[in-house]
Length: 121
Image (cartoon, rainbow, N blue to C red):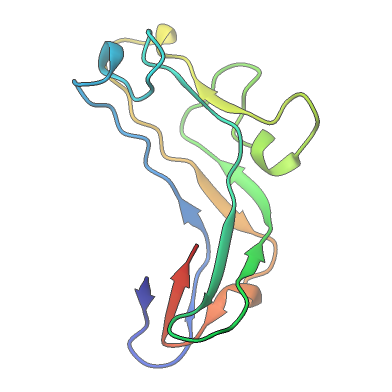
């Protein structure tokens, strides 16, 4: 839940942090034996907290990431092109543990202006 100090709090994007961890295979960040992962979809719904309002689905126009595996760019999650809807990183192209930080930008910022508190689903 987010809470604005007073009045609407605009939300300009969604950022995920995919973190490496020594407890994961090959240091992660994924559970694949090499530590890789595939993310097949991202969805966001928002609604005012404490009310009975229907959750509003947020549509993303753009996605950027500091790392993507060849053929599995993070923008695939926004384009929704059949057969290319996953995002992945490939640890074999570098060394050591890695983290990745994709950011998803909504089509409409006005859709993300919510009251003093909101709830994410």
